[in-house]
Image (tube, rainbow, N blue to C red; front, side):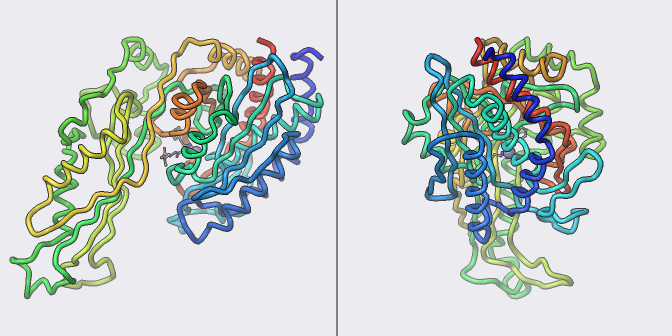
Length: 462
Ligand code: BES
Ligand code: ZN
C-alpha cells in the first residue's frame, strides 16, 4: 500500500473512532497520577498500566511497564520496517498537583466536557497529547496492519517531577532506544488552527534552600534584637539573587548565555500581533516586569530566569503570634538557556546564596533536579517532513516557536541517542497548564492524531 493511502486509511479509522478515543482519554484522566506527591504513588502506577494496555492495542510489541527508582516508564516497539527510519515517540502520563483545589469549577479528576473543551488535570499537559500519539499508532495499525516506519514508544511518569528515572534509563539503554529521530508531543501552539513546531526550549535547575537560625523557635520579645531570624535571612538572600529589574546577581551566571541570532530577532519583531498586549491579557497584568531592555519574546524564551515558587516557615495562621521560627525553606528554580548547564550553574548559585546569608544563620542548598535547554536548527530534513505533515492536516504552514518551558528529555535524546527531536504541540495558551481548570481543546485531540499519522507516513515515505 502506498504511504498516502496508508495515511488516508488510518485517518479514516481515527475519524470513525473519535468517540472511543475520547472515552479512553477520559478514563486515563480519572487517575490522579500526580508524580510529585508520594501519596499518589499507586495512582501513578495504575496510569502506567493503563497506558501499557493502549500500547498493546496499538499493535506494539514487547510492551513493558518498567519499574525505576521513581515512577514506572512504559515502553513498546514495532521494528518490522526494514530500511525505514526508526522513530522514538515520547509523552508523559504524570500530572501536576491540583492545588488550589477551590479554584477549579469541576473536579480535576472527573473529566468534564463543556462545548469544545475537556476540563481535567492533565487534559492537555500531557495525557491528551501523549494519548494522541498512541491513538495515531492504533489507527495506523488497525487500518494497515503495520507501520510505515519502525516505532519505539517511551512514556514517562515523572516528567513533572524532574524526570530523573528516564534520564538514567536512556543513559543505560542507548541501544534499545536507538532511533533516527524522536517525536515529542508536549508543547503548545499559538492559537487554534495555527500548527506549531517548537525548535527551542529552556533548561532548568530546581533547588531548595533551608535556612536555620537558633536551636528552637523563639519569643520575639525576649530574643528579638539579638536573635537570627531565618525568614528575614531568606528574604535578604532571595532579594539579593535577583533585583527589581530582573537581573540575576550570581557571579558567572550569564557567562555562557548564547546570544540569539539576528534571524530570531527579526522573526519575533515580525509577529503579526502585539505580543505584549497578548501576554498582559493572558496574565491579567498591566506591566511586564523584568529585563525590559530585551524584547519580550527573548525574555520569555531565550533569557535565563530565577523564580521563587514557595516559602515554608513562620506563623501563617489567623491572628498574630510573636515568634521567630528557627527553620524556613524556599523552592527556587532557574530557567537556563543554551549553553548554561545545571551542573555548572549549581555551584555558582550555591556560592552566591552562601555569601548572601546574614550572620547567625546557616543555609543549605539542595539540587532537586536539572535539565539542559534545547535548540534545534530550523532547517533540517525532519523539520521539512513535519512541516509537510502539519500542512496536510491544517491546510497551512506551521509556525516555529521557541518556548520558555522545559522538556529535559529532548536534550538527552540528542546528547545520548544522537537523535534530533521534533517537538509538535497542541496545547493552547489558555489551556491553563499547571493551573486550575486545565483543559484541552477537543478538536486538537483529533488534529494531533491526524498529524502524527501524516508525520509517520511522511517519514516512511521520504
Ligand atoms: N509541557 C510542559 C513543557 C512546556 C511548558 C512546553 C511550556 C512548552 C511550554 C512540561 O510538562 C513541563 O511543565 N515541564 C516542566 C519540566 C520541569 C519540571 C523539569 C517545566 O517546564 O516546568
Ligand atoms: Zn507536559
